[in-house]
Length: 242
Image: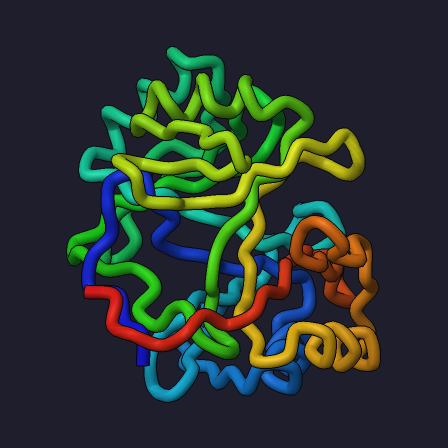
């Protein structure tokens, strides 16, 4: 199994789906990818595949907009410092750093392009443990109207550099695909690996999802029955990610 034991600072390290229908969302992703769920608190559960953690699912708090969303979190060693940098670089903090039990601290922000993004200061080096195989997160995407504006912001925070083929890199290591688009809201979203992406898209639509990007030039993107968007990509070849 491809396992991650550590994450570079600035790398996407965690993903969770916040949904108004926790049971319904669990059933959808379980049927599509074989995920199982472990209760961490009354309103938050860990998604597990083959006994390894691949992300989280949380119940939307009362008063939130009626829809689900996938959140992507970037690794930081100092949440307070990064939080200050977000404001100085033109972002907007919507929830300042808060502890998450003994696991670490997180905060939530909106970048200058309008994309929501989380930041995670973990007590351990790992976040998502299982990655890059069928049913596990196998990449990330940032959809924004202007890639250069995103590069300025994330470059100042973590040294992100936009390559000519549209990928964010840190020290030469790819972190996320950047897609310039003025269609839909700016956002980070996960790409989930699949042995047969076309068949996975078909199954997702049968389960009630809607295909919102066919995937001719970029990976297909689906919107689940509650509104959370995710991409589907061919699962990479195996190999440890230590």
